[in-house]
Amino acid sequence: MYEKKSTPLSEALRLLRIYSDISQGDMALNLNFQYNVLSQIESGRRGITLKTLDKYALFFDIKVKDITFFAEQIKDKKNIKKDIFNHIMQTIKEGI
Image (cartoon, rainbow, N blue to C red; front, side, top):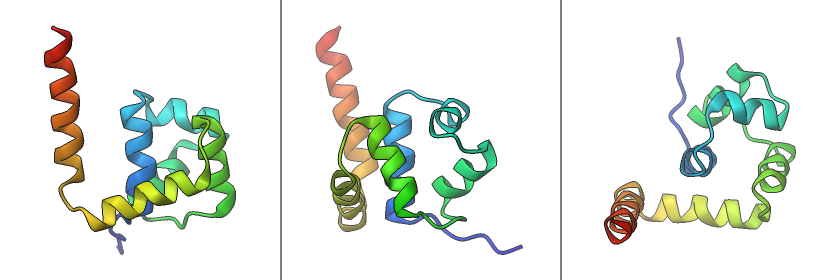
């Protein structure tokens, strides 16, 4: 079975959802997708259409260009997940 590796754009969509503390199931319901379709989009096994980007942008109240910019940052900076994690941990420590 052929499995496509995630892309910076699919990773950006996944991270937007995760860092907003939304489950895949809830996100699928909000975007009117079947759960398996959302899973395929976020894992890079399904192409991402402009309509899909529009749905994400509307849901998160951002512009499509913000999503694509985030994807470019992921592409250009391999350690972005670590940086985001460190930022979150720092925020938590400051709140304690």
